[in-house]
Length: 477
Image (cartoon, rainbow, N blue to C red; front, side, top):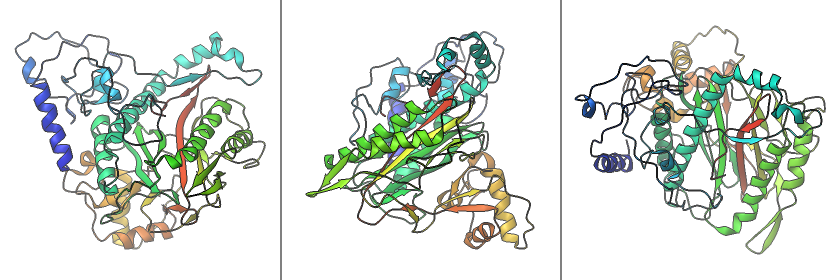
């Protein structure tokens, strides 16, 4: 735990004063799993003298801390983020309107116990032949069968909103990117109540700078510091029962980059508006490019056209599968005309822009890895490779991971490996071997030309039978 996190815990304890909670009502819609980690046990001692009403327990959407939770009264958010790139409605204490502590410590499942989880932004289908879906009884009935899925996705989305709002409070020039990622990821683990493959972090925190568009997170020992003139893409995920929420935004502090960020934000929103059941993926790409490349940005007296990065795409998302087979292009003619979106699919709509050539290549030291979803059984001769693969299987499964997590004392999950028994040592040879035989895929940083700037915005959407829901939408972007 960092010094900043210890100070936050101390402040919260002083503010709460061991406060008591009111009795929970029966019939909870979001229920925590009793006896699992988190902050849930703090209020329990204060309630022992009260007569408790027996309740029937039931399993919730994704678990929580269990027991009593010290939530406060709902407040009006008031703290503004120090960075640019967000809406005027963005607040770093967004979550206090739900009675969350500041900084947030109450597991989100516990925070909404007995309450309805917030929905994402609802958009009606506009394509001809689909306008009736919003009110048709048949499509409404189909949705009632998917409430369990929707609740898991909405829980992950709310965790993402609260974690990123908290992160937006400390992302400032001068912070080491490794410290930034650790603080963000630790808060992610805390609010989701990390429990191995059942729920936790969806993938490593990307914090790609400037000409690096994606897939960079610091490896152990990397002392890179965020600077005022940097343009950083923050991309992280939450998963509940393998339902991954994938959302990203761009951080800048110098207003000269505003047109670049606005171009990408508008392009992403355009892609979301175009998306829908039976929509051709190539049409989404064409609409995105048209909006994106209508912008230009002036940097140090020179005007640069904003370009879509033509070999980066959005993607469909499956259970425990961040890239589920379909790619959403961000340029015209980016895929076959026959490929369409289908009812029930979940997509990450993400767009990338560049002031450079608009094309990325793999470069720099690799930090991101993922076991291939379709990996076949492959005999391994090296004992070290067998040991590392066993660790990957039980800790990450087919979710992405990074070297920094393997270096942690818990090896990436305290609930799976224990607090101090999971750290991997001298594993690079074994990791390379797993990549060479095709079991694990390496994802090096994706870079445009040095000296240029790239930006990204991303949201996760569900194509429900009645409408599309932008589940990761928030007041910030």
